[in-house]
Length: 433
Image (cartoon, rainbow, N blue to C red; front, side):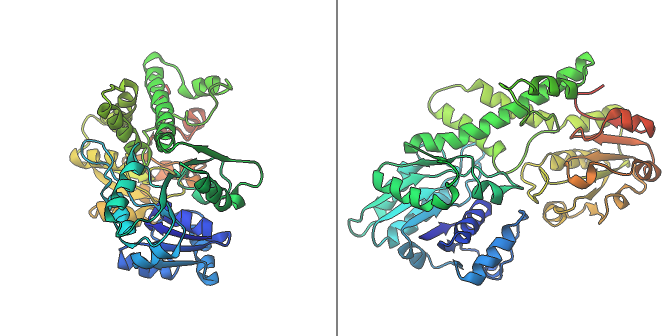
C-alpha cells in the first residue's frame, strides 16, 4: 500500500518506519530541509530504541523516502496520515495551525479518492475542520474521506507498541474506509482482532481520555504519597497493598516528582479546555494538572527544608529526560527543579546517558559530565530525576566518598531506605519516612 505521512517528528517517524518495515511504500513530508537531509541518510534527532535501525533498513530497501514535495506526496498515495505537532496554546488549547496548513496543501493537490487520517492528538471536531478546509481548497469535485486513527505509543517502547499493539482505534464514516484500514493494519492484527472501529468524534476523544486517565492515576498516587509523609506511612507499602487489587493493578501508581513528556501534560490541559468550551467544569481534570505542577517542586522543597539556604551549594543531578529510554525533555520535572535551584543561587552539574545534547539547547550555562560518578565530585547532594537502568544499583560507597555531605534526594524512590541506611547516607524520597 502507498502511504503518505505529513510530519517527520516522533509520531510520524515511528509510523513511517513501522509501516515501511512490513512492505508498504511510504512518503514522509517535512518542510525542514536540514532534517530531511539527515533523514535521507537514516539519521534521526530523537532517541527511540530500534527506530533508527528500522529506518535505515527501509531506506536501503527503498520502501521509504523523505521529501518536501507536497504535490507528489499527496498525489502518490491513497491514504494520508497527518502527524504534525499540536503544541498547547497559552490557554491550554491545542494549536491546530499545522493541521490546517496540511489540510490546505492536501486540498490544493488532491487528484482522486483519498483517506486523510489524523494521528496527531487533536481535539474533538478537528476532523470536521480538516474536511471543511480541504473542501474549501478543491478546484473540482473529488471524493475523499477523513478519519481519526490516534496513536498510543509510549516513548521508549514506541516501535514495540506499534508493531504489537494492544488496540488499534479507528474513527471512520464508511465501509470503504473500514476495508482500507483492515488491509493496512493486517500485518499488525494477526494474533487476534485489535481493530476497534467507531465514529470519528469518539476516536478523537479516546486519545485524550486515555492519557487523562493515566495522568489521573499518577497525580492521585502522588497525592497519596504526600499524605503518607504527613501521617508517617510508607507509600511503597501502600502501593503494593492497593496494586494487588486486580481492580486497580500496579501500572501508573508509582509515586514520584511528577509526569512530563509531550503527551500527558498537554492532553490533560487540552481536554480541560474542550470541557470549558462545552460549558462543563471538569474539576478532576483541572486538579490532575494542578497536582502534577505542584509535585514537580516537591524535591526542591525537601532540599530547602534540609538546607535552609542553598546559595553557592552545589548539586549533582542524575537524569534529565522525563522518563528513561528517551531524550525527550518536554515538561520534564528535572527542568523545574534545576530552574528553582539556579534561581536560589545554587550551582548545578548534570548527568544523563542520552539527553545531554537536548538539555544543552535550553541550559547552555549548566555544566555536565560523561559519568554518573564524575558528576558527584565536590557536590553537597545528589538529586535523582529519571530512573535510568544504570542508576538502579549504584556503588553507594563511591557515592559517599565523592559527596561533601552524604545526601540523596530521590524523586523516583529507586532505593530501599534500609540499604541506604547501612551506608550512613541521608535519604530523602517521596512518601516515605
